[in-house]
Image (tube, rainbow, N blue to C red; front, top):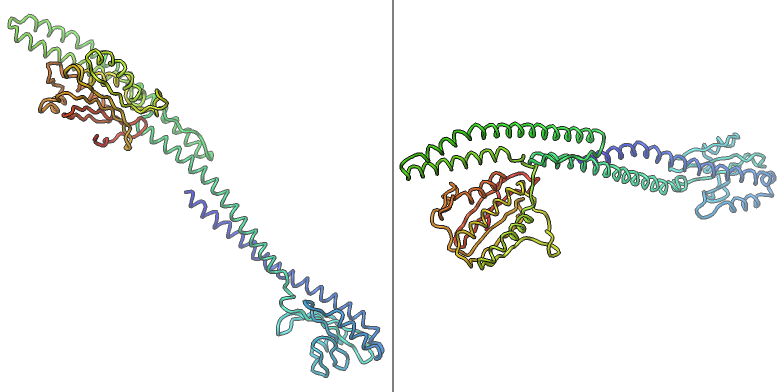
Length: 454
């Protein structure tokens, strides 16, 4: 858009200047010719007036020759005097009838005039009355160069003005284009943030009135979407509360029925199933009550440092080495917030689950590491790695189902996995050494598959 605006401005300015400067160049050429002709006419009239008395008597001819010689010089128009007998006094001296042209004969009738000979240039003829041997004629000849002297300089000045006006027009068009493009790109960035789920994004009204109107309407649309989603979430919360109330009684009845069974093994198995059902219902209700994506974000680096500091005393009691590898600046400030679209409490719960697995399922003295990095594909990763014996074979699939390999409920890794996947990220588990990596898209960027962790 900016380039097209510059091209349009350049073409329009060039056309306007062409329509203006071409007549001006012709006018300067005509003006130079008129000025040179006027000066030549004045010169001829002065010479005719000065030598008129001298030619009244034949004895004063040398005086006329001196006068003609005095008005000629280098760079000046050629001035000559054609006497009545055809003799020419001055440059181009010759005698006889050959000097008497049709123009000279016309001037001898008493008419002063200017004409352009076939060889180019211009001639001014002024008659001298009162000569003893007939009417003499003063003839001033202008060459093409003398006739249009100064025209080239005027044309160069006009060309410079034209170039300056074109450059000024391009500068103004570039500034206008930059403003238009900047305002348009700002609208596009705001639309991208809204599409990524950041409902707090708002456009800054800038640019021409039309783009400001679009920005205002985009902000109104974002506000309306926010209102509708909030209303939908409130509906979901009310439904979740109603669901919890409706399920509480049947689940309690199942638990009582399980406790009343005579077979202790069957009672324990059914009680475990009822407990799993309760957890599933609680998880569904918890998900329904989650804030909207984009309403709550957390700084992954800050949460990682906080949870590491929380678990550090227990790690020290178990003689574990703890390494926290989180980007820092100035010793204790984050180098830049790694905001991810996950509420802080859920992110803390996911990290607690990963750290708790290390503390619960590895021997005392096993060191572990918490690392956070921001990748170039718009994702942030947190990795919890330990130097323990690793997971048993097939544990990757078991972790995806919420099973346990160490006698626990197996929900820890599943909670961490779902936290990452619900945010549009990923969950990677590896053994030998043990590494669990959660990846999240950065807040305000479209969700997409994260790059595999190394």
